[in-house]
Image (cartoon, rainbow, N blue to C red; front, side, top):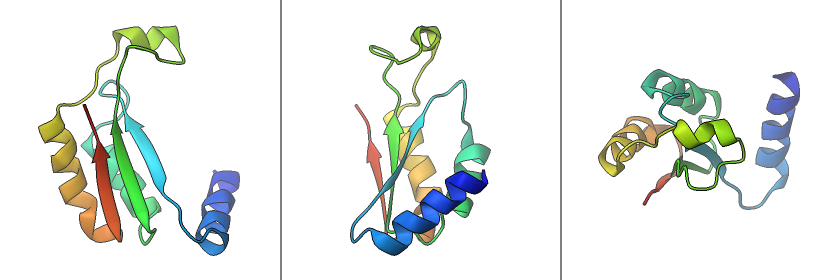
Length: 92
C-alpha cells in the first residue's frame, strides 16, 4: 500500500493533468469500498468510475462477474462528487 500511495502522491505532484479510475465489478466492490477509495484519493483532480463489461476480462473467472446499472453508477458518483474537482462515470 505504501508504494501505491507513493505513486498517487507522485502523480498528483508531477502530472499536469491526470485522472484516477476504478473499474467497478459488482462481485468485488460495493458502495462502502467506493466510498473508502474516494476518501483515500480525496482532493484529486478527476476520478472516473468505470462500469465493468464482462465481454473481455483479463481474468477468465470474471466472465461470471457483473457490472452495476448506469443508475447505480451515477448514485455512487454523486456520493463522492464533493471529494474531487470532477467525477465521471464511464458506462454502457
